[in-house]
Length: 367
Image 1 (cartoon, rainbow, N blue to C red):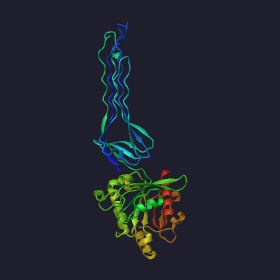
Image 2 (cartoon, rainbow, N blue to C red):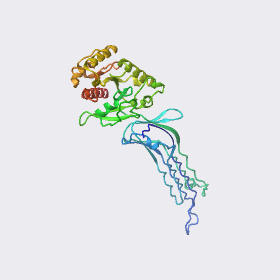
Image 3 (cartoon, helix red, strand yellow):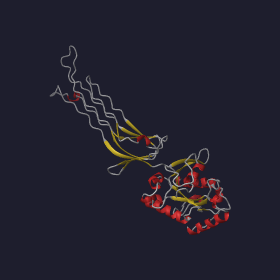
Image 4 (cartoon, one colour):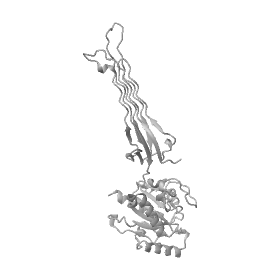
């Protein structure tokens, strides 16, 4: 089961108490104090593991606690340290304080191990309180308590490209055609119920990560549909690909405007990201109808088609657009970086789409 949000109470271990003890041995009448120190309580660590992609392990768990330190013993023997608690999470997990809403940790680096709550310090045994005026101390320190936090774990997937579109516009078909992801594909709305990640391979050594989330509908920012709940999974993406269905009963201009409005209402910073447009399902239209729809769409959003996409292998007879910038510097993020008609089923313009996205991602990483 895919779980991307859980609430937990986590605690580090209490330190062990110091020991009150006096050395006793045959022929030693005044051995003196020899109480050992208590062991330190176990700490709580977060461990990031890219082999996990969900928080389902924590489903049904409410309280997680590291072990307490053991008390000290006689003959100056210290108590055993409490066992640490390691919480394994996927990359992209945020640790949020429930009470304040503050993000305490943002865990994005694979294999990172971060201490979250330190264990309580063990108490000192009575051997430490021996002095000229107190040669028989009967006092030892108790261990210090551990720390407790009520937290929420939120998974925000890390991807280079986020797919945004109405339900049943071909997002799952596209990600399954371009990457190693195998989402469910069917001809009805809300086929995708959970986010999907896929690695798009460009060459043996070059690739990028694509994220597909459930379809967004009008009013998603008010809680309608499934898309809003999972928009956090594209919050980290630096590039959005708006997928506009050429066969949908909604006009293409309306689809784009409605999607951008819902994205902006969810997060203004997400709405300011670089974006591109893919017009999908073009194989379901005749050439005449497709060209008419594309011409109208270009006119509605104020773009002039150009032939730049052909340099990336795009079909010459299909209207397309790519921003004309040398080395893709100073791109205008208020306009689409490119607009490309595609068919994931017939694989029309998929290679061009893949290389255009990679060029955009690469240009942003170099800045």
